[in-house]
Image (tube, rainbow, N blue to C red; front, top):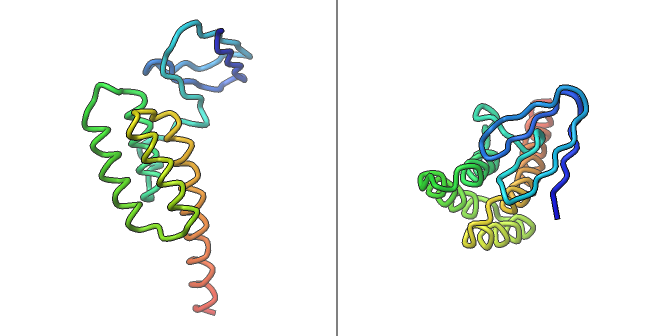
Length: 137
């Protein structure tokens, strides 16, 4: 069964490392196994500004270029740093899922877990900023 991807005008998608951008509405049918990321799943290097975002970026690169061992090494070292830093039960459960996907080389599913960790991290940063603003007032 083919994977159907519907793109809006100007939306981009990465297919096996090639960046494709839709000019007008487009529908792509993928008939075989390829690495695909839609525009909303793509993170630019300059967007990897926090530990969870750096982990997402490393997982994304490991998914897009599985033959590059350095990306998997980056994923492992960033994972270890996050696992040691995040203490919440929700984050630890996500880290457990992430470890499973990393162990099987399923970096696409690892990206979904990284998005959970980014949300968790954003919540921590928001609370810290709020506490800092209240202390300054």
